[in-house]
Length: 456
Image 1 (spheres, rainbow, N blue to C red):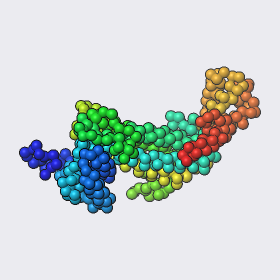
Image 2 (cartoon, helix red, strand yellow; image 1 turned 45 degrees about the vertical axis):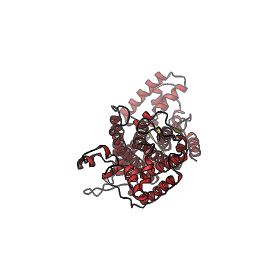
Image 3 (cartoon, rainbow, N blue to C red; image 1 turned 30 degrees about the horizontal axis):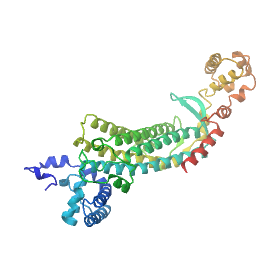
Image 4 (cartoon, helix red, strand yellow; image 1 turned 90 degrees about the horizontal axis):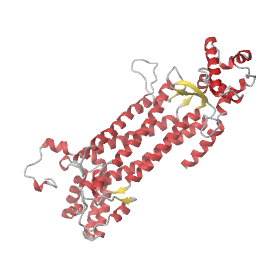
């Protein structure tokens, strides 16, 4: 028997029952459904809608059901469709008809909106902790490896020399913005929808502010139609999660490249790699590859919900049942990716000699030659042309800029003197860029100190 079948004359088709049910995934909302129901029961008694005695019986029954859920003893059934019906049926089995009073002044529409918000609020806090943890790992690595100099790249071509720490801090800054997006998203999640009913509120004299306070919500939704009909707060979270995964994927791509024999910049710990079933020499960076791959599924979950919601008329539609599986999958994927990435990075070793040696090729100090000429009062565009000719000359003669003789330098411009050799030394090139946000050692030390303090 269904809790809604009074109007129906035929039993639900078995296939429809299976297709219609959401308990196969929304069982994850059990603790949040119970949490919301307890607050609702307290409010019903406070407002005189049910007796205090009935409210206490309901709350005690819900506490016992929560214990069953946590112990793995609760039996979820498809016949009862969803988490709400499963818990309500169990409640009435335990305490009798009084359990049926719990659903007074609410609908499954505002109930599920509440459950999802409670779940997502909790998960955002957990993910924020993992983002912070990864930031801390990157800051430690930056501090430990501050002396390592490497090429910076554009178009995957060597561009200018930087410190490895500067590269690591670039991702720490991306994660900092990811954290801020979660903080901002939380504000719109943290609004109570309960009390909106199916779509038009309720005639009962409920106290929504009381429920909001009980559950720790910052505010109460101001339109019952809106509260039950939108999942923009889930979409916003999925967008923030997609951006975060994009950052992890980009970092993963670089680690994959850097572990190749062609680069050989890093050594990922054996505990985060796998081998080949046929090639005994192989050590594959599977974890970065998996994170890069899992980014696509997170993007897919975002697109799925956007497409699901785009054509729905107000208010609730059954299509919105499709809001949960992608959300649950994204939460699990993001949490696992952040945790394993932090562990992997903590055990990753950077090859200082290889990185430094790579700065000797590719003319990464060419911009510094142009800057040198500008300091000698040569217009930048003219300096750019002079350096371009000197680079072409080096390519033709298989030389580095640092290997040019003074006679060769002055063949390009008479303003060159012996101080050019100091000006284009790799360490000089890096530490000369001491503006805010630059790669100079002093600036990196300042940023590390600032960001560590911000995380504490």
